[in-house]
Image (cartoon, rainbow, N blue to C red; front, side):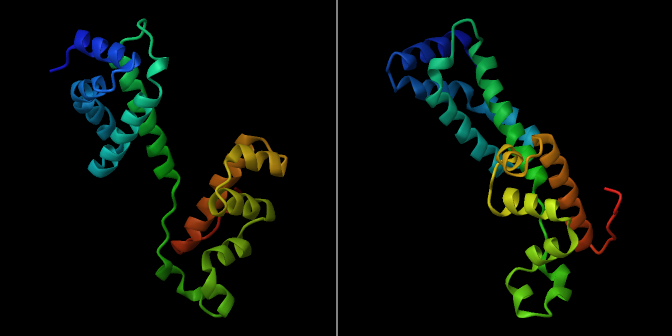
Length: 179
């Protein structure tokens, strides 16, 4: 059962260096955190992974908690934000079954990088560069915006359109050239 006074005491003890108080914080909040995360991600294993990250954030950022904040609200906000970030990240992932693009197996070069070759063939040059930097190289959109001279929202828009084109092609559809 959640006891706000005990949780505040445990947080104060932990802030003052009593690391054993973290166990009480965990015991008081683990179900609350799980039930905050699970409806967002709808995956038990992923919810548990995010829950672990929430406790890491609490551990690392305990000094940012102030008595003005409700401890429950502070912890739920951390959990919700991490879950939403993970949900948005998963939503942007494009999963492609390599068997759906067998027609690319005509040359040795395409056997090595069929999806990159597909992107290079069907995307505009700026879209291709943005996809390669964001997806293959792992740059943040802000960094890609600096490299390309576009705004961050422009990079996001072009990346989204490029991924939609690639998805359409791999699913056997036609490209909407108006995007």
